[in-house]
Image 1 (tube, rainbow, N blue to C red):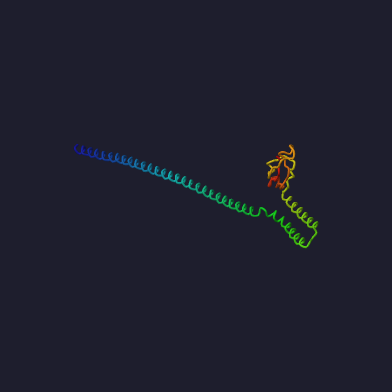
Image 2 (tube, helix red, strand yellow):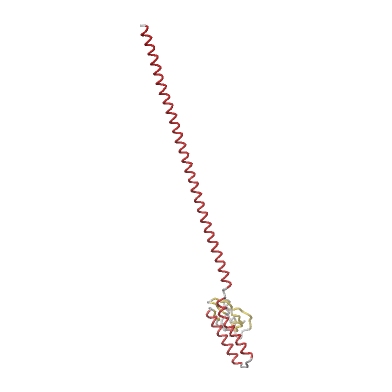
Amino acid sequence: MTLIKTMVVFLQTRFLRILNHIIMSKEDKLQEEEIENVETQETEDSIEEVQEEVIELSREESLEIQVKEATDKYLRLYSEFDNFRKRTQKEKIELYKTAGEGIISAIIPVLDDLERAEKANKDSDDAQGIKDGIKLIQDKITNILKTKGLEAVASPIGEDFNVEFHEAITQIPAPSKKQKGKVLDVIERGYELNGKVIRFSKVVIGQ
């Protein structure tokens, strides 16, 4: 009987130890699982943080690229505009220098005519011939200037004085009341270039 009790106690003790071991093993396993879950969550959090940093870095890089592209575009446009400005300025200077080239080239033959007339008139007593030669030269230069758009203003004698076309040199008593304020004489003819008055007619008006 004592032996049986002893065996029962032994078996109970053994069973309790095994049960305790099983319980401890489950608790350890649960603890290990919790640790693994925590580690897994931490790893996932770390991955998300790294991904966010990568995304943020990519945005910064994208902005840097956009800024660089905009700067390069601005520099190219500025360079092109500066070249255009310099080229235009150079063309303007050249245009100012050669603006009268056409008219001067056209008048040079008239200078040749004047030189020939001067040489011919040194030993000539033909007054009419000299007069005719001067008239030919005058007509030639007049026709050249007409081709360039120059026109003589028609004589304003007898017309009302007009500040748009006339410049009063002096005033004299009008011969009659009807001639007061009118042009009585022309001292210098006026000229228009392509319809624009470039020299006013210098006139004498009645008062």
